[in-house]
Length: 253
Ligand SMILES: [Zn+2]
Image 1 (cartoon, protein in one colour):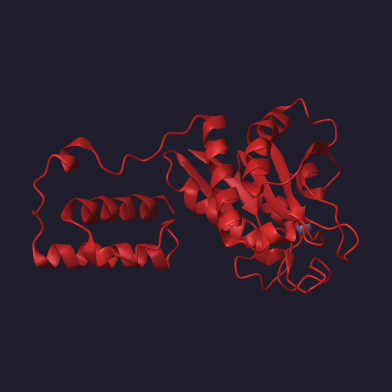
Image 2 (cartoon, rainbow, N blue to C red; image 1 turned 90 degrees about the vertical axis):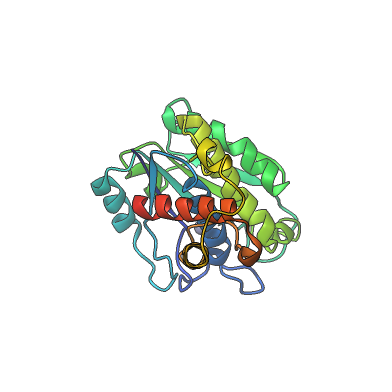
């Protein structure tokens, strides 16, 4: 089982860390982090744990985050951020990924190289490259770690991407997919052969309702990436597949 620690930088309440229009950095980071975790949940033999406060209320110290990840025994750590330059609107732009000083050629650097191009592509912004920095979360975590600065909050160019939830979700998914490729994870097979060969109608009314209920619960618990708004129109195969996926992800948490 591969363990991935992650955080959405800061908190809602952190001073500074906001756009010139007062949007909090955390809200952008959080959307990427959530999409990342949802996508990673589609893979086998991997588990993730978040080390900032998922409600954004408490600004958990960097020390507490790195201690937590080290104690848990995370195999990798990813920190999601968005950049700022002057905190006034300007025309700077682009995406950076950081590793600790001297770590470009280590596993951290290789992880960054595996993920960074897809992140740049998902934002559709300038590539500012992979850089080294003496950041606490990179220095004090014992495992390979990267920190993504996904575009500038105080950029007239980048803010358009940051305000687009679809862009942020895509970034999170791309990070998960490229991470999965990097460490060689396989996706969970939702619909196996036996399920596909079943007749169209095989559940009774109670079974159908229970499956729908599970899927709705999964959406509420953030275990699915999709919202499954049309669950009432699903056929029995779809219902069973998603219900199995729900059980699968639930037992992993
Ligand atoms: Zn930040």
